[in-house]
Length: 166
Image 1: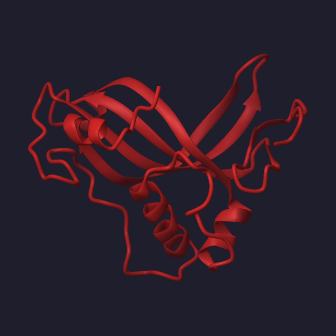
Image 2: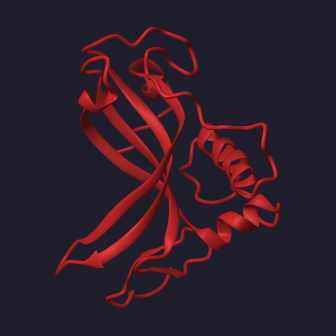
């Protein structure tokens, strides 16, 4: 990876290791461990969050054209994240119009179909389109422009598939 990123290069793409500059678009796969708060998803409490992948728009475009694959890098991506990002790259490059993000909602597990009720913990795996805005002294400001849900996992499936590795 790039030795030390300059002030305007806080983030780096996990594929090309190039820095992502201020106001550049990039994409992340995130895992959000949440509690189902009410019928409105905005009421859900985030307990833990992590990004398992950052990819620049250039690498995402290459992936959409089949020039790079997500199956070799990074090693800690879940199979559903790799497959989801691969399909998303094609969708985003307008190569796969049939695919779309999973419907909004988190009432059942994407893998085992177990019900997720109010008060239950679950993990939302999503792809976000983001942009690094003006930097503050220590922490850059990130603006999420779009969000594409990939999967909702009940607590049992999240543990079984080792979503939380730390």
